[in-house]
Length: 356
Image (cartoon, rainbow, N blue to C red; front, side, top):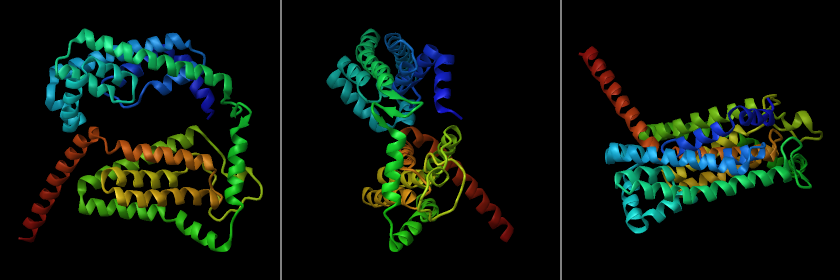
C-alpha cells in the first residue's frame, strides 16, 4: 500500500472534521496529540491558519468537556484514570500558576487533558480556563501548521528528498557501511545477538509474571501492542528486504520476503528495555537498552534490515514501553489481576475438592 496515497486520502476525506475530532478527544481522554495530524494536514494542502483555528476550537471544546468531567466525576474517577500523583501535583500546580498554568499546559508538552480535568475538580473559573486554553493552544497549533506548510516545500514524500538529500540513498549508504564491515568473529556474535530477542523477551515476561503478576501483565500488554503496531505498519508500508533490492549484501540469516519496515526484533527489544527502565529497575533498564541498541545494529549487520527500519523500530519500542507504564493503564491492569486471582483461587478450590 502507498503511504503517501493513504495520508493524502485521509486528509481529503476527513480534512478539518478529522482535525477537529482528534483535537477534541485529545483534550480530555485519548493520548494521541493532534500536532502530527495538523502537520500532515498542512503538508497535504489544508490552509494552515484554518487548520490551527479548527484544532484550537476542537481542543477548547474538548477541554471544557474534560473540565465538566472533572467537575462532575471528581477525585475518584480522576485518580483511577490518571493516578494519585497527578492529583497532588495538579493541586500544587494550580495553586502556584492558576490560569497561567492552563496557558503553559496548552502550549507545552504538559498533559493538557489532566489540566482540563483538574480545572473542573478544583472549580477554576470556566471562562478563564477557556481563555487560557485558546491563548496557549492557538500559537502552538499555528506553529506546527506552518511547520507542515514549510515542510512541504523542502521535503517530498514521494521521492524521499529532503532538500538536496535523498533519504533512500542515505539509508542505503548507511546500510552498506554497517553491513560491509564484517569479520568471522563478529558474524557469529551478531547472529547470536540477533537471535536472543524472542527467547530473552519471553524469559523476562515469564519471570515477571511469576514474581510480580501485575508487572508481568503490563509487559505482556506492551509486547502485544508493539507486535500489532509493527505488523500494521508492515502491511501499510511494504519495504522489500535489503537482499531483495541491493547487491553484495552480507546476508547471514533467513531470506524472508515480508516487509522490512519496521524491524520487529528491534521493536520488541526496545519495548522490553524501556518497560524495564520505567517500570521495574533503572539499572536493569539501562543494561537492556544497551542490548536493544546492539540488537538493532545486528539486524543491519546480518543483512535483513535497513538502518531506517531499526530506527523506526527503536521509536515504536520506546513509545510502547513508555506509555504502558502510564497511570492510565494501572486501573485496567489491576482489574485483570483481580479477576485473574479470583479465577486462580476458584481453580485451587476445585482441585482441593477433587483431591478430597
